[in-house]
Image (cartoon, rainbow, N blue to C red; front, side):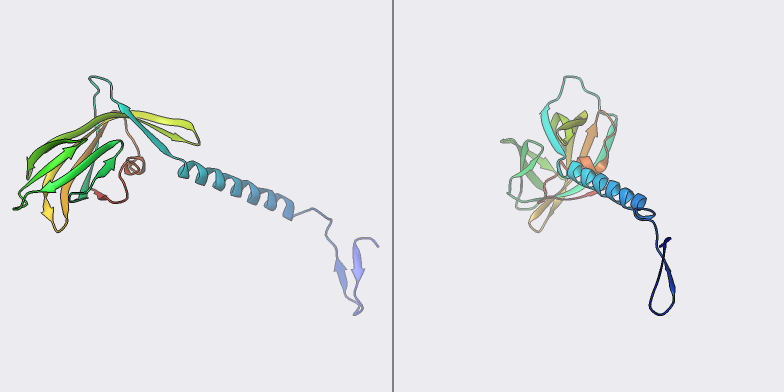
Length: 175
């Protein structure tokens, strides 16, 4: 026939040529799925490599978080181990950074670390920057010690990347 068929009831059914219409939509759908898979893989493979910061680095950008550190538990930020042990009256805390304990009172600030971070995704270097982490003791409540952690960076860094430096057992929210 010439592109038409007839049913037994006498109605005419028009046939569409094969491969027309749905092919370009299907191709767009496949491309969108591939792009989403690549983006998901890139996000899931984001890695942070921490090393020594160069001397005399400057830090013009600051992002501050209010952080609750679990008392007397090791917390690892980057490659730095931190333990916060509050005093009996909770007015002071002994903050041990990589085994170096220092006592801090409420409102006191201490530099925790100065380092260089290299961010990779899918084994490709995305960015690198120098950073300094300063902590200010705000007091202790329950079984956590409260701090402001200021991430000072040498270049502007998206906050979700800075958030990747903070471990899951640390409650942090931007201030």
